[in-house]
Image: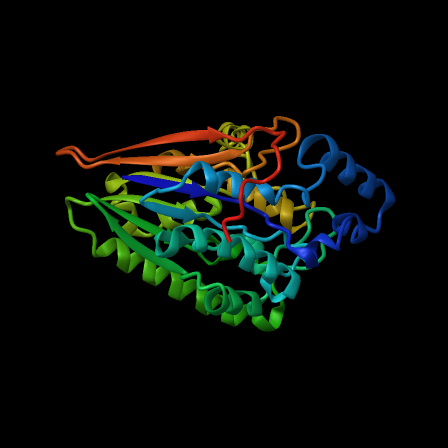
Length: 330
């Protein structure tokens, strides 16, 4: 069986297309704004609004997979408050609509941090919004935890942000903190129950958007005791294999508390990145990759139903310069 995995689509529908320069506008310090623009221009992504067509190319290249996992971050989050922002919601709805039109009920979607709201790295605007959680679950129809049997494997997906809530809670509104704690407890309890019900013969392919959640899962005895059944864990969030490899090398880095919560969150996640190996983690790149390397694409999982069940992971690259999008799929 073939499982297509796409992650970090960051689609920008009309409302978000109208917000060109959204990140620079929330940075008050001139020197910091120039630094952020240089980072975007040369390293990360010069024009995040210019890549919608890549999703159509991925769909055209994969006409008939058995399953499709969309591993989070469907919108560009130009308002920094997730899909409670109507423009961001329209982007996520369009991206998921393209996938669901092409593949129907074979699409399994997980939540990314940009669906829920995320403070801008340099400007500090925005953050987690409870309304974004509700719109993701009800409007976008993304389950906090899902499970699908595929031959000898069980595919399990879970929302990474509530599982790693201690890293994200400082970015939430104080009046919403108790509700986020409740969501986190319920999400973790559901995921633990899903692992508890595994049969000894079954192997797991776990899907999480953000690998920051993995150390928190490792603290749960039910999950830790079944790590030998985890064939691989597929994550997104990092966009490029270069950042994924760097994260592995920086495992154990002490947390940095002096540069704001975003830096504290990243450095705290790196401190426990050793758990990436224990969960047999592989990265699904974003369709763009990053400007510096132009290394975007998608991931293909091939599941072999043999006495010794096997899964192989193959990364496919997308050319940086693509022709006009293929025939519409929606």
